[in-house]
Length: 104
Ligand code: AMP
Ligand code: ZN
Image (tube, rainbow, N blue to C red):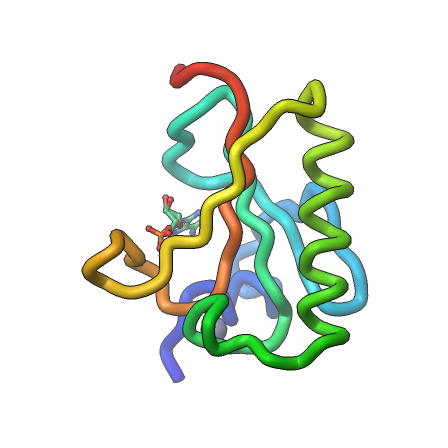
């Protein structure tokens, strides 16, 4: 499968992970829409959050989201999962946007 986030997870582009755990990685969005804009991405491929059913993977994903929010924001942030083309999803590998601070 030709999935850009699978390739990032595999380290093919040398993307710096700002945080990671057994089931998920976090890296800065290439086109930041806020002062803090970090993507949190499960290591295993699924198309969007509605398709991710493994309880351990979900738990680890949210654990990393909370850790990123704690470490990179002042505790106030937005969390967004675009799911489906019609709703703005452009990369079809599950990912959470952690956003904080006004747009740069
Ligand atoms: P979405 O519209 O929710 O599918 O978001 C996909 C996000 O991935 C966008 O905000 C893009 O800027 C971001 N993105 C695409 N390619 C890369 C990349 N190579 N490294 C970091 N972020 C990326
Ligand atoms: Zn993928």
